[in-house]
Length: 228
Length: 179
Image (cartoon, rainbow over all chains, first blue to last red; front, side, top):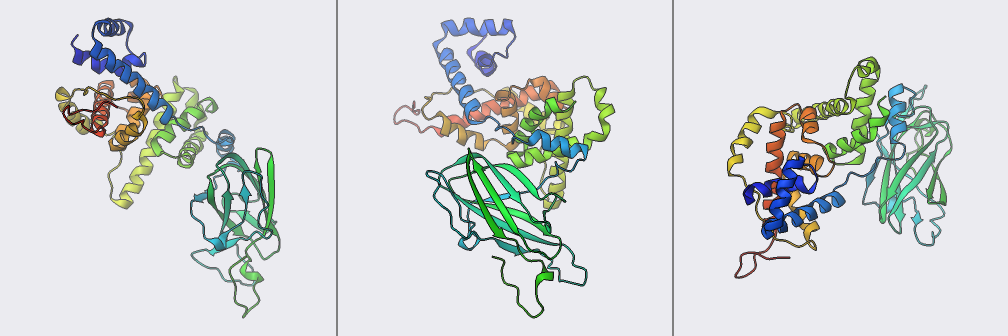
């Protein structure tokens, strides 16, 4: 075979994907052709670099159980879309420092809410309202496999997870600010706290924050302020 | 029955979507869709390629819905004939260029070169050359002949090597720089 033909087979040769006869032909050619042998070395390096740089990351730890639960209709596998963002406004900060030394966080964590596109007014029979709540976490260093557990009061659910008031995820935090958007459904007027627990390799932090008010909580003529 | 294949499905879905959340959602959508058809699954001989084919079709359907909204073309990986004929017609002039490079800067150059491949070419290349899919597996999932996969893969590799070569600065006097 010509050098051109040999080189077209090198990607499969370095991956042991040639039939034994073809592989033997290539091997024999490489023994007496330094130029093609050099190309084979480069192909091997390319193979290794591709494998190391472009391997598919593992699925999240609860992936299989969540998928199977969704399929069987148990409800525990329902999807909740949690959007992580890189930037964070200072007003939205649920202060949290994870990292070396685990410095103490802000003593009064804050939540901020965004009104749903279609604001629902309070009526005689309160209807559930949607609120997006953003939690901002500041990590001192990149952290993988952080368990985030949210505990919700009885009048609050995560959209897509009806009836569940304690939900956990495995998350990864980038160094710096990380923003988690939580789609909340405020079912009816009520009081209570949202409790966020973070467990990073045994280092735990617990934070409490006030849940945005249901419109039914608002006294007429009192202007609603951004939930804090 | 499906559980032993979930990680492989996730891997394929990640290759298609490029991120973990969409990949996991895609797998979940497929499994939820198949759950009422468990009897049908029991009669499938080779379940993994069958599942991956369903997953791929689900992915393409999702792309088509989005493309109708955005007036954009969908992936051409599965729309074989016209495109592959065109690709195959170029095959005769297609030779893998000789590469002269060192490993020290291979990674960053590889990133640049892969970024110049089309998403479909990149997916095909990574499925085969990184994830270890056989050409027959790719052909079955995409629903195209093995020869089509082979010629496309050859072209993807040739393009990647050409782009890698392009990434290298020519050395004065030699026209080529060894890194």
